[in-house]
Length: 279
Image 1 (cartoon, helix red, strand yellow):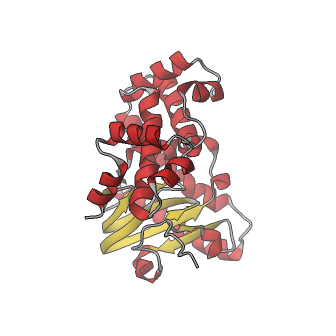
Image 2 (cartoon, rainbow, N blue to C red):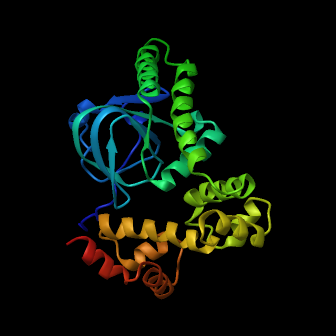
C-alpha cells in the first residue's frame, strides 16, 4: 500500500463549535492539540491580547505581539504558536460570511502587512468586555449575531486607525490595490495575468498597474508572482510533494517554466529552497 504524503493540516472552527463563531482563551492554548503545529484554518482568526507577550510564526515570519494589541490571520495562512508569557489573550474564529465586505478589505490589508497593531488600554478593556459578553450571549442566544458584529467592528476599527495613520496614497488607488490583493489571495491558482484581475475589477490593465505600483512600489505582476511563490514555499517546506506536483497544483503544466519562475522570484531553485529551509 502506497504511503500517503504529508499535507498541511486544515481546520475549521465548526469542527469544534456548533455556532456562528468560536471564542478561545489562549491561556488555554496548550490544550489546543494543533496550537504549536503548522496548520491552516479555513476561517478568519482575530487575535486580541490584553497583556503579555505572544510569539507565533505566520508564513515563515515570526510575529511578536507585545502588550495590548490585535492581530489578524486570513483563511489559508500557515501558522503555529511558539510561546506565550504572562499573556491574557483570545482568538475569535468566524466565517467570511459573518464579516462585512468593507471589513474584509481592511482585514486583508492588515494581514498583508503582517504586523500586530497596538491598542490603547482603554480600547483594549472595552474589547475585552465585549468579548466576554459575546461568550455569554453566544451560549444563551446562539442565533443572535449582533454582539459578534460589535466585536468584529471594534477589531476592524483598531486596524483601520493604524492604516489611516500610515496611509500616504490617494484613496482611489489605495482602494483598487486592496480590491486587487483581496482577489489575488483567493484566485492566484487560476488567474495568472494582470489583465484577468483588471477585467474582474472593470478597469484597464494599465490603470490597475499604475494604481498598484503607486500604492506599493511594485507592479501587478510582482504581487501575482509573490502570492504564487508563497504558496509554493509552503508546499515545499511542509509537504513532500514533488516540484512537478506543486507546479500542477498551482496551475502550471510546464514544470520547467515554473522552476525558472520560482528561481527568478526567490533567488534559488525549488529543491534548494526545500533543503535550505529544512536545515
